Length: 320
Image (tube, rainbow, N blue to C red; front, side, top):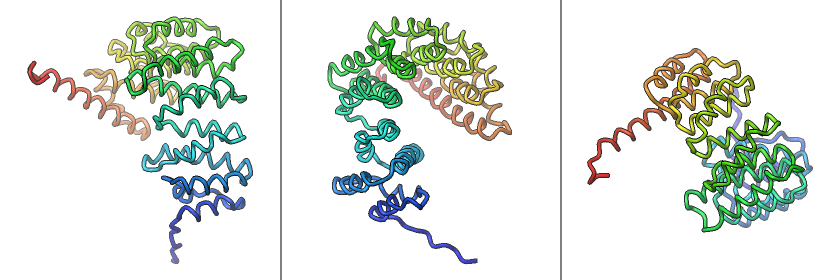
């Protein structure tokens, strides 16, 4: 049998590959576009302008997927270029691709997208991205006043009843990270909204808030007839560390919705305790390979958290 020689891609060859409209996009070729310098970004920009829109859309989507799958791939410089693309899908992927970029300069760009981009998908992606920066601000990793700038931009979006519902939902979820006192009011209003999507986003924001005030409401939504709500409630239960809801989470391991099952498994690893651990051990032994793998990961998190609690308990006052 003749073995095909493995192609080793370099940056220039990858650009030529992009220009070949008849060739299916190669993940290996796109990997060669990682970690670009200024001259390479300029070359990419010249090539990019000449590509048909469908080629640009598919490339942008693949770059995001590859970056999520392999942490060693860094396309941030390229994603920044995509922010200026004429196509809405490409711009949205550019925003999404920058999910690990903590450059404060992006706040102004994303806020401008949220305020004025003509496409709702781009505005929604910008709201989600601003939520990540809001979390950084809460951790003290942005300059003073940045949280207020981001929070005000998101508040404006949530209160604009003429705004697309998905954009408003993403803005509510993002605001969950903010410690400002106005957030409880925002979440309460969203939870009382007639749109099921907005109610689910309110529950997502409850979890992100780390505010125990919401525990009872979130626990009650674990029994919701709406799978979307059960999913968000399971995630929020884990984020809120509500061990009192362990039994309800265990019941969701048999939920007919796969995403709800997965969220429940992750939440059990977060809330911890003997009951959660036994349920995760059983799930890890399941013939369902996907759920078994998720249960293994949740067990690792549970055991890591248990070890941390033990170490803190064991320290003398001087060691603490």
